[in-house]
Image 1 (cartoon, rainbow, N blue to C red):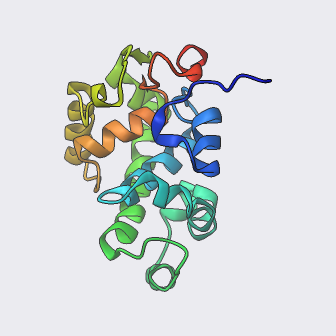
Image 2 (tube, rainbow, N blue to C red):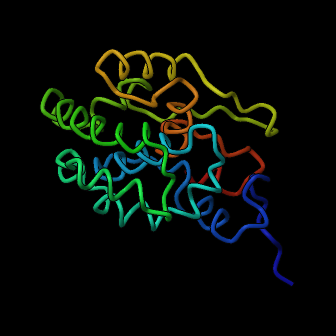
Length: 189
C-alpha cells in the first residue's frame, strides 16, 4: 500500500486546491507575467477565500488576457463594462477597475527596476524566507516584510495591496515558505 504524503491541512479534500498546493504554492517565482497573475488574483481574493478564486482562475485568465499586463493596462471603459458582466469572475467594481491601474503601475515599476521581480524580491532580500512553521495557527496574516511591501506599493498608487494581501502574494510567489515542516512540500520548495 502506498503511503500518502503529509500535506498542509487547508488544501486537503479539494482536488484543485491540492494540485495548486502540490505544484505551485510557495515555489519561488521570478517571471513577471506570473507575478502579475498572483497580484491580480490576490487582489480579487480580498475578503474571500483562496478556494473561491482558484476555482474561477480560468475565467480570470480569459477575462484578463492571460494576465498580459500590457494588454490589461490598455483596457478601456468598454472592456471594463464587459468585465462587470462576466459571471465567471468576481464582479467587484473597485477590484475590476484597480486591475487596470495596477497593470499600468506594474509596467512603471518594470521600467524603473528592469523587472517587477527585481523590485518585489527586494522585500525579502532576494531570497525565500523559511519559517519552519509547525501548525496552521503559526502562520501569520502579515509580517514586517509584507507591511513594507504594502506601504511601498500603496505609495506608488497600487490598490488592494494591504499587508494581508501582500503576505498572501508572498506565500504564492515563494517569497516565504509557509508549508508546514511536516508537509512534503516544505523541503521541496
